[in-house]
Length: 125
Image 1 (cartoon, one colour):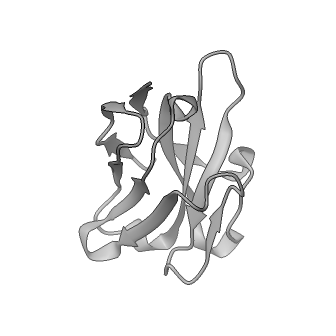
Image 2 (image 1 turned 90 degrees about the vertical axis):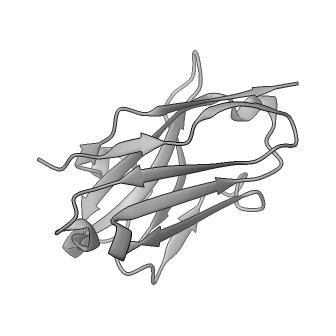
C-alpha cells in the first residue's frame, strides 16, 4: 500500500494562485508516475495532469495547461501542482494518485493504483 497525502488547498479569490503538494513514500516515491485529478460537485472525476517517475514526460489536460504546472522533487518524495489565475470553475477536491513506473504514464484515472484523500480548493468570484 502506498500512502499519499495532499496539502495546500484552501480558499482563494479568482485570479489567485495555489500550490498543492502530495507527499508519498520516502524510499519508493521515484518508482511511481504521479497524477493529479479533481472532482467538482456534481461532476465526474477529471484528469488534471501527470508526471513521469523521472519527470521526463508531463501530460496536462488541454484546458488547464496554460495555467497549471506539475513538478516533482524525488529527493523530497513530493509532487506539486502549481495553479495560477484560478477561476471559480476550478473549485474541486484535488487528488494525487500513483502508478508504478514500469506501466507507463497515463491520463486515465482507472489506471492509477493508489490515491490520496484529497485537498479542497475553493475559488471565490
